[in-house]
Length: 580
Image (tube, rainbow, N blue to C red; front, side, top):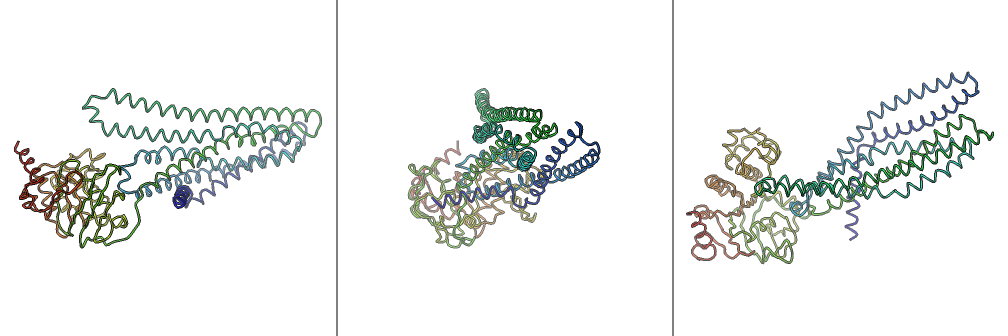
């Protein structure tokens, strides 16, 4: 438990430091301009007092140095503004960029299984809405906070110098906005967290709606889906309205209390000036100006503090999510499988109370080819997911050259194995970069993998620089599947796992792809397939037949047919279906 808390704290620190790492010089420039602006504000208050006192009976010659001082203030103000115009946008850019880069790098360390058990919308929201909330609520407010706090402290010093008695009155009346700030301090952070959660739900719903749009149209469910969208959209906007209402309430209460405080100080100062208690008209106006400097932090600091707490809540929420399903460390093993894969009494279920695999035992020799067949739901895909290290919660042993898979580092496992699945994701990029997965590879090697996966015709017609569109909308289902197979061939992994990879291909192309895979030398091939073609199945060294989460039969095609068992029945039914 203590280790988990320590890891959580480390994750939060890493996320927070991403804003400031390599950014301290720009932050320093921004804070320096804030300090300068604070001093200029106090100087303006002093000049206001002098000019009014001169105008109401002071020495006219004082106007010369007042004018010179005013010109100096303006010059420094312009210089500070120019520095701020350079430093502040750069500081914000670097902070936001580094934070999002760090978050994405942390995302890439999560395991393959994480996005089958987690909602990706939480991370989309964290990289979009939450970053914007942190920028607006905290990062952009830090220079303003420093400037207002320094100006407030300086104003108090000047007020004491002018009149200790009037300062005491001012401090007493200032308790009103302070109390208002304390009463509303935690409201905004709670509302910001609620908005973040609402955005996450809304993004998940939109993603589902758009992904399932063909299903919606085919079932004529537009009206029902629109109602669901409107309901979720209404809930999100209500949450955002409550956040805005909380911010407005804080503004109103602190503003109203500040106005009462300011008017009270002004009335006391006027009374002291009229009764000859050492307060001049210029001092009255200076006090009013400095009360603005005191009131500003009292109205904005609670909001900035609420933004700071909201930032912490969003960062902690993300750190907790990032701590789930992280790639494991462990033993580094050679990337080449030399002896084989051994499963010993492996039992596993996504729900521990409902096993999908039951006491599975088998051996797959290095460099051999193995077909996995069986009815839908028999555990074929789950077996491949376990071999890819997707889940550690199995009972029994999975050994890679004698190394227990649970103890092997994820990097070593992925260096050894490549998985080609039925569901293919194609990036909105060129055909070349989709095949190579953004690596720089010789064109001859790319074209060879494309040829062996049946992509030559597509490349001949469209070219390697053809942009595939969002999720490959410019390609057919079969073409996307061939891209996935080409990726697997280019990995040169020692173990190639294929999960119904030819399901979307026509018979001729599927046969060509399978022949290419079976012709690979020195690679261990484990292929889940529903295509029970005698000519192809005879080429596999071993066929594993799964039924109800167990391996009920194993052997070559001829051996299994001779047994006239479950495989014989599957094959016979498949042939009669093809004949129909």
